[in-house]
Image (tube, helix red, strand yellow):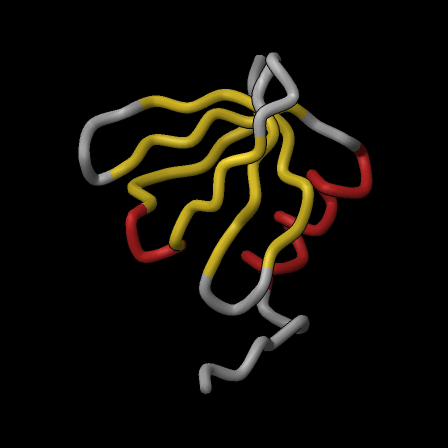
Length: 70
């Protein structure tokens, strides 16, 4: 099992996006671009809700980048 370190800056940043309900843009290794709000994170995954209120489970290892939507 992978330890979830809440002290890491990346974890804290994602937690702030969750708390603020900030819309984010995710780029995946498959070259897909996904926009939505992160509902939760754990040590392996993020759950992202899109504009249609559909939840998608995304493995963190598939992320190229994550940034706030401008």
